[in-house]
Image (cartoon, rainbow, N blue to C red; front, side):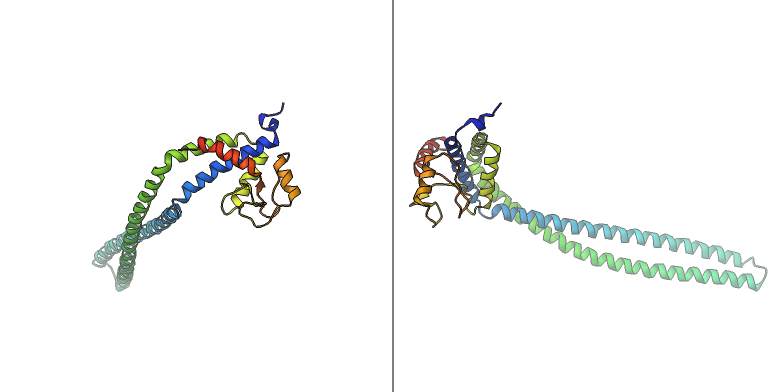
Length: 259
């Protein structure tokens, strides 16, 4: 059983496409009033996210260094404990050989302590440097977040002004899109995406498609006016409709999208 969209005539399809174009063009106008703000907000969000990841990395590196310092301190404590043990054993040795062996162990532990203390100093220096970088990073993040908040408020205010109309138009856009078969709708969306001004369906102005300087031959203009098939302009790639249809649909849609 054929679907409703397959049963409608070519003329009805053209009217539905042009009506959809009117709605989508109005949505484009609304969104264009926001200018570069949405992009600015998105770019700032991405930048803040990136800086937060860098800050998190610094914080993890600092934690790792602090853990290394704790390990070295434990090693120092252990070495001192061994030194005390060896010194105590020296009091009970039976010969010089045992005493010298314990002295070497004590000397070794002293070197271990010195090396651990050196590492602790190096780790503390690295922590101080990373904390300095982290403070600078957090200051930058704070500044950007403040700027982002301002831009978001500005964007939200602009969206709030037209939100009700935009929601209504989005609902109408879906309603009119549902009248068009999937393949034709996909073509319409593709043409819109590739068009600088978002126009996929255009009428003729002085024999040429709106926005184009290439005149359509009279025979082709007659075919467009007959509305027997979907005709696409070979130069602009846009779907063409005749002036009379444009005037009729503009008048009809004026009351539908009036807000």
